[in-house]
Amino acid sequence: MHISYHGHSIVKIKTGEHTILIDPFINGNELTDLKVGDEKPTAILLTHAHNDHVGDTVELAKSNNAQVVAPVELANYLGSQGVSAAGMNLGGAHEFDFGVVKFTKAFHSSSYTTEEGEVVYGGMPAGILFKAEGKTVYHAGDTEVFGDMKILGERNEIDVAFVPIGDFFTMGPEDAAYAVELLKPKVVVPIHYNTFPPIKQDPEHFKSLVKGAEVNILQPGGSIEL
Image 1 (tube, rainbow, N blue to C red):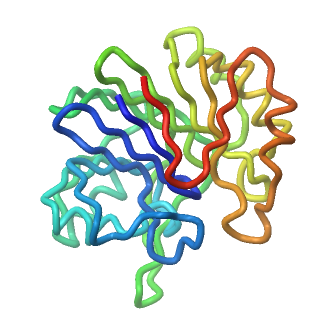
Image 2: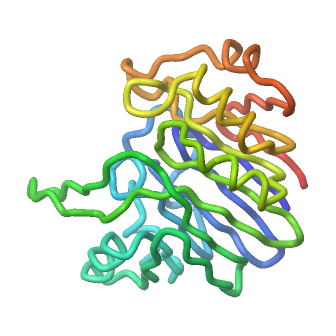
């Protein structure tokens, strides 16, 4: 399994025949190394409806016939835009041909603003547990730290966890480090920081606070092999 980080909350997972993009906010993301026209995802997973996470999903899904998996209300909206979208909810898991997807809790908000300025309710925000090739990847989405992360860590052997550290909209470095203690991943990668002024953070500070896990600070395009 090849896993790469591409700025903000974008994660790309390659498994055999499949390429999975999580939260593909490309256009408008000054930190990303990706270009929409170059990406060929098999599947797109979305944690919640905010525009800096849905990003370029519609264009990517249509041009690549990609399966989108998202919280059900967001999936319904994307379906109305001509996208093939499977709507799931918290606690639900399903084995797709590209891997197992399970939505977990995240404490945040979730709405999508259309180009016309309409605000569309996106359902519950989520984290994602993704399992394939005997490995488990956890993408926390946008969230604060919460006690049930301990359950996730106890019931899943998490190989890599992607956790937000930006503060202001999500947990900051201190709470994110505590989240790592609860999740007990082998490796943790900080995400959702430095994209906008309110979420400016030093990932080395986060790294200094983490106990019991390897911290891999990935630059956009940086990757991990599992």
